[in-house]
Length: 155
Ligand SMILES: [Zn+2]
Image (spheres, rainbow, N blue to C red):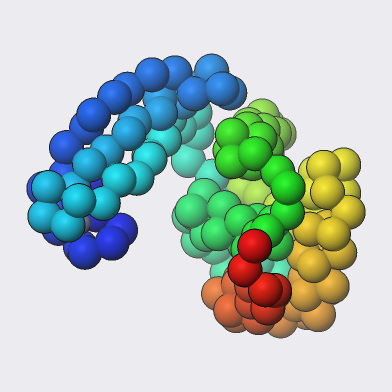
């Protein structure tokens, strides 16, 4: 696992235990090169999902991409990291159990919005306001770059 701080590929696992959501393993890692500490979650993937864009273009579902957009929307919100992790696993499980490996990108956006709406109104509004402009564009990379972290004073 590459160190997110310095890029060193030789990091060490300090501790492994089941995560709160009980479907992933949480690992505390340490980078001997820069002293950085970070956490990874390892999980079993039940099915390989394919995202179908409105243009008909298909691409493999990218959990990290979805997670990135959710984390940006939730930045500086008073929500436990474990809660966010649980929420993302919940969304993926829902997608995996929909009975079809092909999932329209629109459905993913809707499930994310629905879930955010239940958990945090501010994060929901951030996500939804950007998402709605991109339903037509259907370009998730563009969507993520548009969903910039809000400029807030450091606490
Ligand atoms: Zn490092």
